[in-house]
Image 1 (cartoon, rainbow, N blue to C red):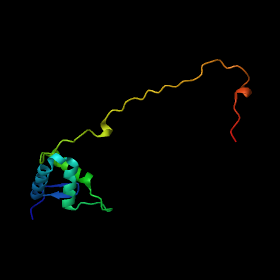
Image 2: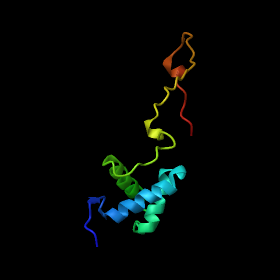
Image 3: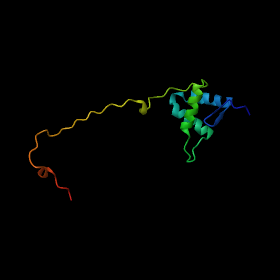
Image 4: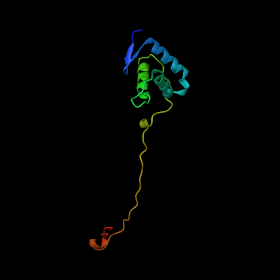
Length: 113
């Protein structure tokens, strides 16, 4: 078995792994990053204890491989919501500005029972 080139996110990456990742990326390029990470998770049977795919771990691995210029990952389809600036909400309130006359005891409402 070939020596691992890298250890990323707890997975040892060998040359044959890189070839498979590159092939998977090219076959699923149009479907996007999520589809690519799902295919790789299923191939490696990378699952959480509850059986869900470890998609975020796989995505982190792919981004690190791209950072090292070992793969070319497709651009994201859209910007994540947490990066979009929020619009300031302008609220308007209406209130009575007329003068108040009388005793405080006359103005205080009795508690609801």
